[in-house]
Length: 367
Image (cartoon, rainbow, N blue to C red; front, side, top):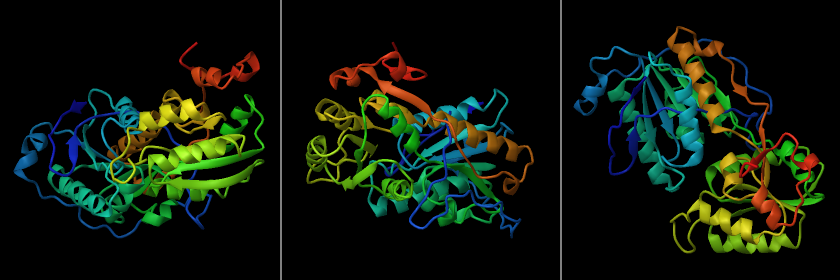
């Protein structure tokens, strides 16, 4: 396995890396299907770009190995991104393909112009690096990059997609992948081990991925009353919402806090600061869907593992490199999550963690 770092540009950062991932239920959008899309029939092939530039000559020369390009919607250092890359890496042996990683960085830069430019730079990298397979992680990488290659000869494996994949023209003759879905009902059941839940609210930062994810969550048949689905733009609004929900609901689902802004600006607050403030000031159980969110201080959740998402996507890529047609690989979603409880937050809320409550649960910190 080859690992390389290839520097940065004024707009987007590129790095060669490898990681691990997990996969989840079918993502949805308003009016989308909850069933997995059918396998596509082989379609018209368009010649894959073959141009090369001097910028990447040393990467392309000499090794003779197959090349895989992983395009992340978000940035290096974001835990979800890091674990997806780890999942990809775990599927590659020492004689496996080269891997290059490109970060579109759209979680920290949410304006449309940045996303469009990041997508263009990823396409430029396709022309110069000439990958044999492309992995595209999360929805922005689909919308601003990968969907441009539908029904070409360039194989695409998507992962972590929240929207109905048909939004991007998936699946197609050259595209397959992994759908992302939160373990909502399972997380509510786990939270009920700690406290009764009759009435809940859902809170999220206001970004494109959360809009799609909440659209799916609203279609779930739940046995609790959801009093409010709230998306906020800045940290002051977030604080006001948490304090209001403390007195109006029994539990609070946190969809995402990664793009909460500093009031009056487009600058993101450090996500750990948002999570820490929430854990310290929420007097009701907080429910989350990512392992790093429980580690950041939210109370409970049946969480997704980015490592599984990355591993499954790379498994598909390796099959394609071995000659398997992408159209023969079904779009998949995960069925099993990881139950987690933050013991420190539980004590802060006065919750007793008896044996029944923690049976089969991963405790944070480990106990």
